[in-house]
Amino acid sequence: MARDDRFIRVYAQGKLSGTEVWVDRETGVNYLFHFSGYAGGLTPLLNKEGKPIVTPVVPEGWE
Image (tube, rainbow, N blue to C red; front, side):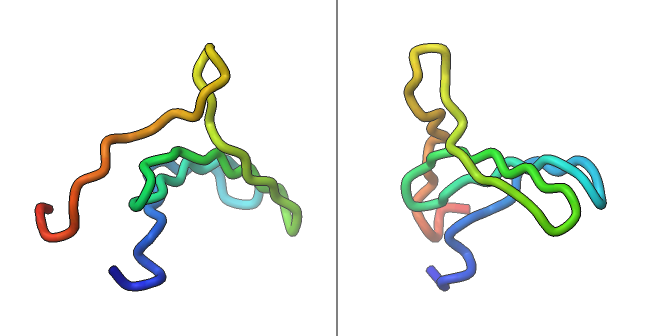
């Protein structure tokens, strides 16, 4: 897998200020990225038990 293919954006909302959800293709962990202008922040998405939300990972070549 190429280095720039590790993360995939699965949700996006907004232009100058917005929110995105990214999934790590190696671990399946979901991340929330919120930005406004030149500032932004990234954090793992957590379920109600406080554990990271994990999307099942599809092995390379199975897509």
